Length: 269
Image 1 (cartoon, helix red, strand yellow):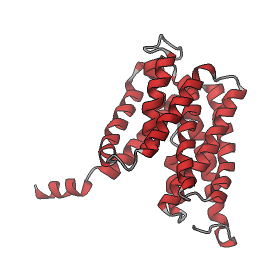
Image 2 (tube, rainbow, N blue to C red):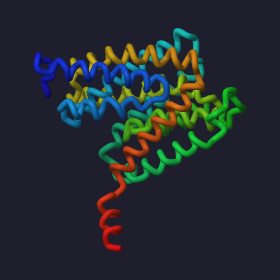
Image 3 (spheres, one colour):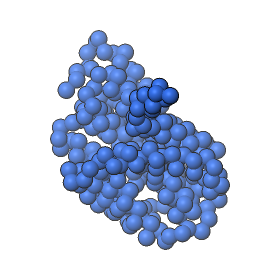
């Protein structure tokens, strides 16, 4: 385990604390805070597997805070979510246990394509711009069961982009506005991340002191971000959501597209 808690690393710890505040704001509004915290932890010298586990801990604290903020402002309809929480937990458990049974390489190739689709939809779709809810395509019960299992499974098995997938599902299938989708996504994504955190805790891949310190920053950021969603709603959620999906798509394409192969091909002409 990397030891950052000494006088020589005070500046690094403050940097991670500040990063967690920023990530908390972004996460509360549109998700995707991991795009900020994971690279920061790696730059700080935390090993990859420990980075993933520690990141889950601080993210769970932030999502719980955002959820509590929305509850306080009476923005969450709990009866419709209870079924979703149960099926999301079940899906995440199944996904976690299935990690060793299926090949992740296919998802690693398909995910950039999925994120490109989500980003294009967010930019060009009129549904994302709606400020009023419309008639749903599925009943709430069917949506929570079906999407809870599928998206929960994906979160437990793989994970990247889960928040964006949830938000788009709420907009397309339940007719929610982007603000409503942002709010309703939080407890469901939180449940999936709690299950995933349990896995990392089981294998001993969590730095609790670092995770809790960053979690304190997440609390500050999540309260700020949650209040921005409540007060400014669709005006802020859509641009942040598009920005997050653009960044995530760019990151995934950079990691997955064989740029060296492309460069060699161009050089051949």
